[in-house]
Image (cartoon, rainbow, N blue to C red; front, side, top):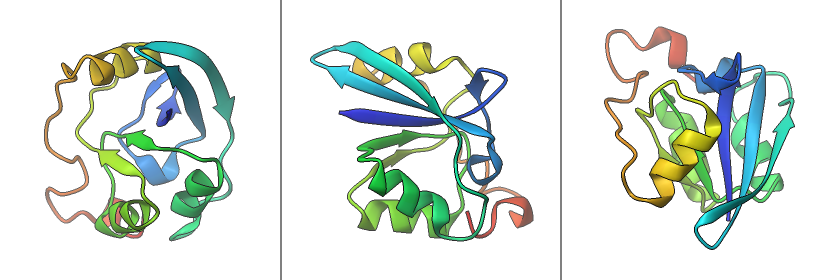
Length: 119
């Protein structure tokens, strides 16, 4: 399994579409096999979901994500978990694998949502 996490300063960033890097975490069994940092392509609607699908990602852990990105990722067979806290990738993955990851609201679903449209 491969999990992708949008990062800023080594921790999950709340804005999926505007992150500068992603951690790709390979899982084997119940442990982390490897971690790789990748620079995503420039942000445009629909680009990141396709890029993640092309990189064989199975799960995305995110703080906030727009509806369009969620739909595109789901259509590609990628599970989306939103509302994840700003923690380091390893902590998030261990919580996800143990089914103990505490998530809150999708950070892009409240208010006007303007800053999250099209992600």
